[in-house]
Image (cartoon, rainbow, N blue to C red; front, side, top):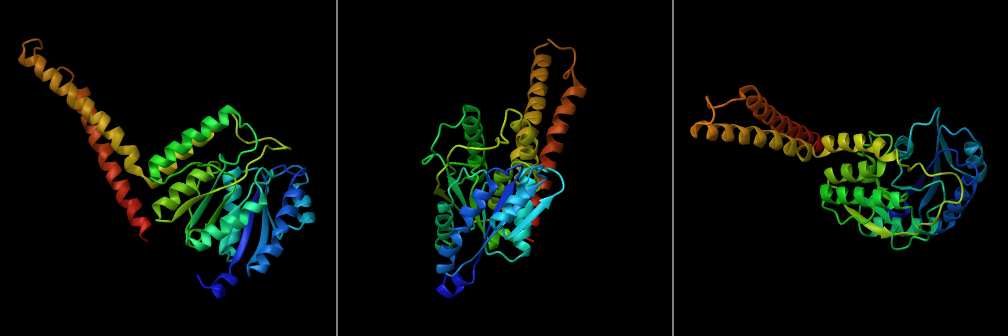
Length: 309
């Protein structure tokens, strides 16, 4: 990318917030301090806050601290919905690079220029922060375990060398911003990984600082997996349908075939009075397995077709 092309780039930081009135002002003020650094490099810089139905003074504090735009949900819709609204607003305003940044100030704004530089210089589309090399506190076991499970799952699905699948900071290019698909209202990080992978985007990690939350409370709890797993399943079906339907179909098909051959064997040995004792069960298992496999193939063809539109 030439210097002239770089000087035209518009960088927007999207900050989803729900009842973060205590800290949002400090977060926005710290982000605004990056304006001069980006201006010196020729970038246009803006900060957008998405107030996800807050019942405190989050919106007022964000505006007072200098947010360039505050997008407001009338009621709390979920972090994924807030990220989606922020990305849609940035796309409408012709952003070239979007950084998602947590409102709780657990991440360091100084990492943002590094993400942007990596995105531009390496001609990437998605850059995720990797927290665990520079984490400044002991993360609760339930959160660390959840991150390990989801990171392992995303690594298996995408084949990317993922080290952290759900950081609060990432950067995306205009190339991906124009085509992103974020249907779920919670697990946005996994959705973006799977969606960008399916669309052939280029991905990398950048080490980032991660510190303990000082105000408010995390949205992650023991109930969180029960909220996000159904959405993970739906996104998986929408992105990699054969990963879902092939194992299910083969399980039923092989179970039915195994039962069929077992009962035929017992009949040949004279233990059963007829070749197949449980005809309906065998036929049901085999037919359901075949139908599931064909459904998976059909879904795969639809996904591939849509991906090429």
